[in-house]
Length: 307
Length: 254
Image 1 (cartoon, chains in turn red, purple):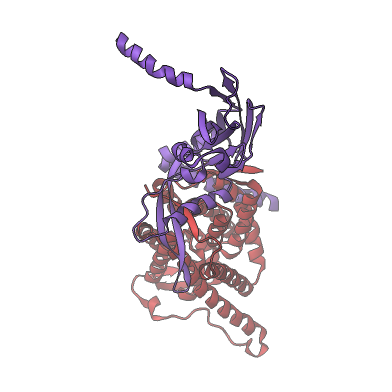
Image 2: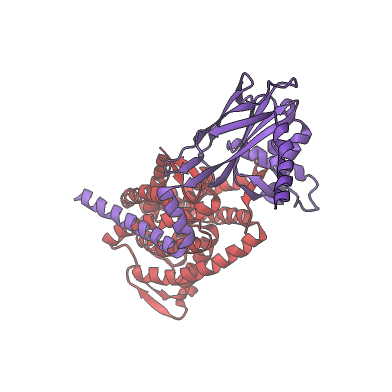
């Protein structure tokens, strides 16, 4: 069944969109990432104009994240206090990021910079996570080390800065400054890369803030809802590039996918979950890196003239 | 006043008299509505040749049919290897390139039409693209224009059908043009040319309206006229869907 998208002005198969939304939704629920880092390149691939893909992707992320976070609320695995602090930083960062994006656009190299950002960040985060979770798995298997108590997080100097806050759900008593900075940094990146930023947020929460993995996913989703909604609104009012019809198909698939994903995620071991996410991140990174390195079949591309 | 009228009549008369053959044409539809399940459309251009006298002795009659979509400027970018990665470097702004162009004829275009006539009436695809703004640093601006043609031909947005017009007894003609699904809104122009000895002897032009209707129209207008409301509505739909799915799944589990 073909469907004509009013803003993108292309005709695509409705089931393809539903499937795409569903697949990304499952991943979103499993790992607590918005799925934008997968959705946006996939939309490019099926021929949606990049501006529309980025903006509509953000709108779809709102739905799948909300669907996921509600499931997490039921199990009390959302640290609302931490989420709010991260969000505060995130909104400031996103606002700055949108300005940076406009600047890069004027310079005419936005596509390259977005791709480079993806390759660098996905590469670093995917690699680190993969190594770390592999080590954790080996530790769990090695019987001689089983008795050893593993400290969940170390207090490093950044946690002792002023403005100390109690994050009861996470079991942390640390300064509010690191989460604010993490939030702002992710906000900037998510505005530039057109994604929710969960794939950066999740590892940052585990490794930088020392939050327990169980709480991380729900809290990340909670924060992503608002950042994605903010991005959607910015794109709708400045670029007119949110395609409501496209969004509806993606999110119908996405919300159900997210519910299924959350249930799969609960049943899986935390270390295994992290290894899978790491592999996924590395695959996307590798694909984008190849695109930059291999000579493209078509050297020319068409673009709209800025008005 | 009378003098002016007489003068205009005098001007008009010889032109009307010299056209021995005239084209009379119709379209299967002069409105294309883009609905939610729009999947392309086909337009049939048909017509006849009207003559006051028997056909002239000159070469055989040929027919060319073109359909042109609204013209928009377009940026063509070229990738080049910089520090081992492929980066957009040179770009040329093509001032006008139709978003859709189809040309069908009774025979190969160069046998049907002379260079001069092509230039005058802008019939072949390459003549439709106007590019003057290439920067001084780019010496091969022509390759950028041909890239537009190549890329759009791949998407069926530019079509050439030599032999796509059927002509019966030098009088009745008919051509089918397939409009692809990824169509842009606007005024489309259908042109019909009659040629003999590669010279245009008569031409006719009509407009086809391509527009979004119904839900497509409503969404498009809302997005452009009330963007804030549209953005909020999009977010609201997303929230509703997210919450709804969660609620449905809760029920299923019970």
